[in-house]
Length: 284
Image (cartoon, rainbow, N blue to C red; front, side, top):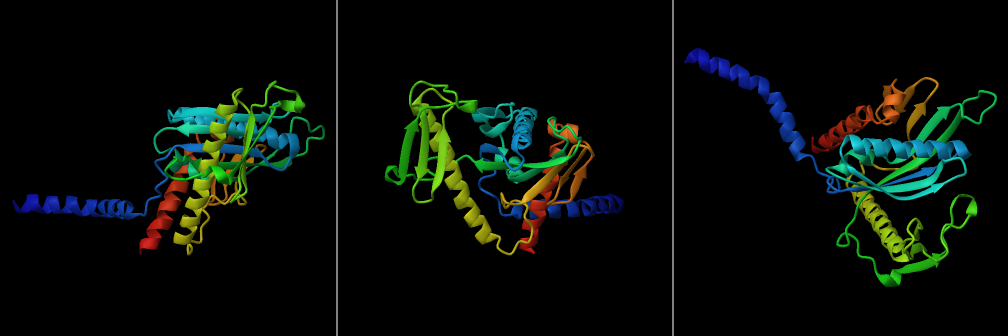
């Protein structure tokens, strides 16, 4: 019996560190938005046509990532330029813990490569901005009709050509905050208004969530999880086949697999772990 007890004690001793980590992880203050669906917005930044092409590639990367995780990816709007790039695009992503995994994608993504239009073979640097917003319900954000200015106009496509003969496009301005949302992809004014309100609600909810998060984590030094859109978070260097996330210092030499979403989790998972470590440090 003594030998059995000794063996059991040794076995339990080896499990203590793991159990302690599990307990600490359970005590980490949770982001209540983690379990929510998300609204993804991608916009071309500096770099003209090349930035728009990169924005389209990022949007496609997240669409493939949603497929990998068996999430539903519903395109809400796309504004293309003349060569197939995206000036801006948005989608709703529905599934399990969508926001928890994608929230760290918010920020400025930088690309370094030789554009297809470059005749001298020079490497150009362009950017695209990604915003991931937790989907908000009506109970989360109360929007008063009196606080909205709603304008309707005729939708137009790339190059300005008309794609609709009725005033179905909708622009909603939230007067107290100045937030403006525009939707024109649907032929129905009613559907465009509903989509615009959905995005507006998500932006207002995210602004409120970030305000609370920043107040709670005022002493945190890291930028992980702050969603600061002015921050350059990641560089995609195509000549070197390299993707570097500047917040956690992770570099992968498998840019094709990142862009195909096969290896995107190899960046996202360390970001989640870094955020957990920051939150754990606050408990010490």
